[in-house]
Length: 307
Image 1: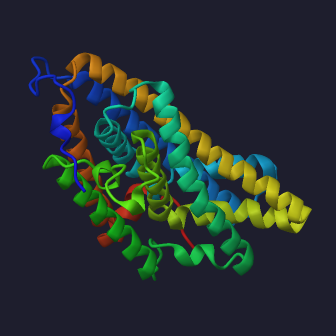
Image 2: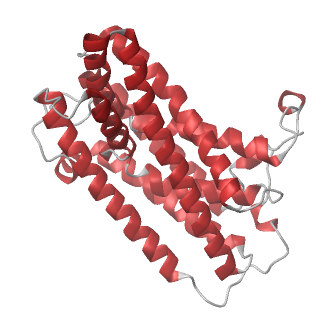
């Protein structure tokens, strides 16, 4: 039930040149994403949700809501964690080609996991109405303890995955094909990696649950009141398609970066995975700390009064 990632390939584990520049560029990219993602969210909630300003149109707002949900303050740490997770799954399945096509497939699997949770969330929002989504918030004077606990548990899971990876065990190893009869359908590494990417997609939305629910509720409920069931289908489709497209695009970009790192490191997977392990652990601790110190969480990301 386990697989040593240090044994991937026959290349030496040492590298003569430390690839600092690609990681610096990635760090800058993640900071910019967090900044502008927060700006979009900070526009959407006070303007659309609280003031009920739909002047941009329901369909346009459904797309903006998808961007805000994907890059929300609740999910900001999941993108660097996804970079680490992607490298882990990629290295755990050595038969899988490391190229944009492989990254595209991983992105589709991750997006499918995100959509699966988001569809259920949309049904719940439509069933329970406008009061449900605000009840999931954690930065209000009376935070939702269940949502808070879920996010802390997700942070702990990221730490565990990072520690296991640092110790040399692959994330995808426990889903390796052909180990048991129950997993006999996993006959190739591609299927195994798709499964764990699907699970990470589920985790992504669960971590961002309060933010995703809040930005989703406004266009869905407005479409239901204005256009009925057909409007709900269109608004939900635009919202889900936007989130899925952003995840696939992110995966392809990571895949291209991965190609560059592979060329620089010349097969030294251990070095790349050690850095990825640190990212997973750091994101896990950050997620937990911000949910324990909600005042800091709000000061960092939320620049508007939350009602």
